[in-house]
Image 1 (cartoon, rainbow over the protein chains, first blue to last red):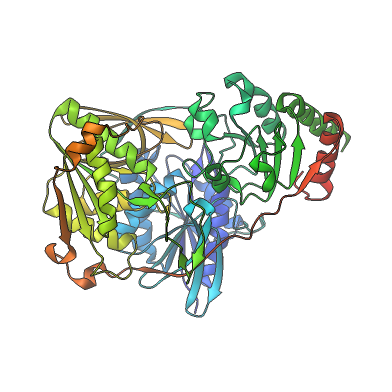
Image 2: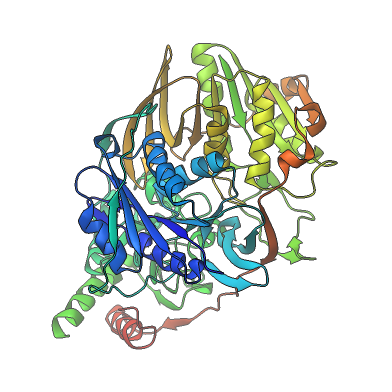
Length: 326
Length: 257
């Protein structure tokens, strides 16, 4: 039986996030031939992004544009999304498990009095509907969950469900919905940018992570260069954060972020169980460590025994050469 | 000020996970206060010390959770409440948890509720925002700094690495992120005092709830472990050779470059 699905899309720095395209792909699967409606809110003209969502597989897009939606607030965005949901009355809702997704979906689920399965990494068809796999204990284990009553409401972990191929010839209806956004109870005074433009740790395809052996804030520089060369992001172990070499927002592990990039390069990270929990489901793991007995080598696909300050710059150089020669 | 902390008892982060009989094996496991909830307890104590009032730590669970409540009391919380669901609840999800907490808080008047931003076991991160919505109070998640003046609350929060400065007002729910504070260890006098502090135990029947109200909306069918990762190749030779081989392997064997 076909179903109608609302996909809540999200933009950052004026560009749609990749996970929103992944959410559209999942929406399409859940719809079983029904309609996939993307919902997008913000300030100004959203038409170009609305069309891009259609090119990635949405049947149409509903936009909510309002000066109050220039920056995210739970009250503002929830009112906008709720208005779209009320208009569309969908059988299911999909969103990315991002900072905004984690914040707004529980609020919406509470308003709708529905269940919510968050941080989904895999979906399959079961006997009684779709079954959603999600990591628990930071990826030390997984659980398969189903919705037993009401809407199918899920958030998906970036990088796990493949987006559909972009089809520039695809077109669909873009409509706007006027929402009287009011009573925003949390006011954003200022946003201090600490991360580099572009690549977010949770969405990065490549992560170069440093441990205690980077020895200081400046020790992260060669790692950043390697990450830049690979179009990736820099992460860190708890030891490096605790030592004050970097911000806690870079921490990967059981406390901190859980990541699943295509390539994870662990530099001078010993591999405590808490760190492994946050990254061991990465597709390919490279470990560089002076200590050949380091635990990280037990889960690495490729191990390099040696000094990170010697190896990492050479690696950056080699990759640069490879690109030049390609 | 009426300060509340939502606390969850979780496996120690050192624990390896195994499965027996379709469930996570908990025999002999060490338990701790969920690390993010520990930040919440610490911050609650700091807020009380600055503004006066009382810190009440609330958990939903079974009798075993008393140990973590006592730890929170030993850190400096004033009172604790165990909502014991052992006899009444076979299965629950975040919807269930929030319905119970909602019923509890309807009978109390929190000025501020602090919780962890996520529990390291089930990691849904839903309970805080869901509860705030039910109580019709604002919420701010993943906070790394908070100061309160009168009814005005100034907060810094972590948004994927960036810092967002937020202004809001009481009553309020916040969820705590690493970097907010350094949770204290309970002192010996603290541990002694904690033994005499109130630990109230209530059951679902004591709250204004019917069984139907707490019926979960989701269900876990199966729990499984990821395939064990095998140790791969350790590359040989001088740094130059290792690097060349690595790039070639990443390009040709695993095809990630």
